[in-house]
Length: 434
Image (cartoon, rainbow, N blue to C red; front, side, top):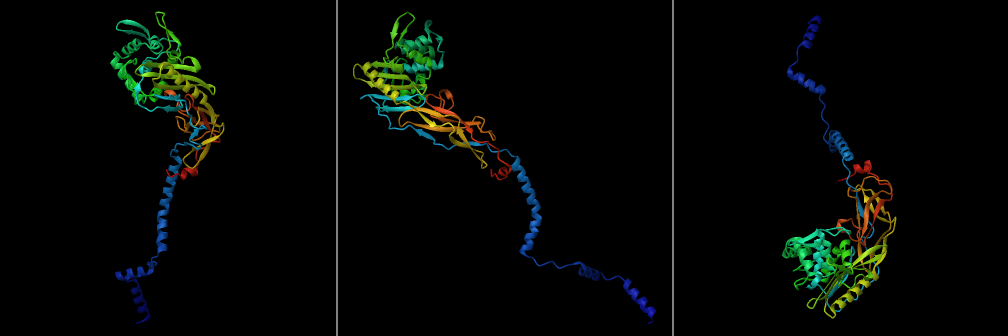
């Protein structure tokens, strides 16, 4: 074969198609690279590359949510003592030898009690509940006489007239008139008397008539003090019971049988005597302490030594004057003292201080509560130094739902932030767990 034939044969060979299996094998040979052997490090790297964008997106979404969601409501916390006790030993009052007695200070609690809690007849002291119920449901002002009373078609004067006849003149008739006028019948009124006693926590008291003429009217000294504390909250009722005498519509004068009145600040409330019940006296007095009037309420029951009226009056007077001498004013918190802090609930705390001195009235060994409360709308997230953010109260609550620390014998003051109260920053928001 000559050279020309050889060239033609080679050209023919190059242009002929390869078998299919030969093409695939050659392609695999030219392009395929064997995978590297598997390892833990390579697996981790691959998963990081896959999940990193997802995790980053989730973190961004969480950060945005943390930054824009509402802040938790700040709270106010008391860091000073939760109570204050007046120095000294508990008072040993001159209790009567027999019967029972109790005495308390309005707004501050019981000073002491003696003689146990067995219910005993209280005679016409029961009419104090009659007066309380009638005035509670038909109040009138200090310069007013109240509604006119008409019973069985007959004009009976005004509510003030009837209350004076009942409390000062010890008129059984007045008790019946008030009961029928108030409730339609004495039976219905007595039921209201007993409902009221239960509401006031007088668990050992039972009333059977509005004037106390029956022996079924029984109570304890502690229960009568509970009633007396509510009774003296009314200046109108005190104005009536402090009268040394009362003149009825006919011009007849009735002397107040409570011989404590009007001496030594005594303002009532009701004396009741009978041979069976003995001498019983629910009394009250006003004592000026710390620049304000403090009201002492006490009861002495079941005094059977004669003359029973004088004996029970003497016993009540001794207790009353001793309590007057015990009352004193103490400073519980100094002005500017740190009493607590605002907690923003994200790790921030701002001290709060008393805006003024807090004093309270008490007696030896008397313990009063100290509380700290925020405003009705809640503690703010931000406030300038000196902004009021709550109230510190020492003692009980005021009567009629008044705020704590404003009642007789109690003390209170606004609390202000010592430094600027600032809202939590971005880092605090991002790090919150709730």
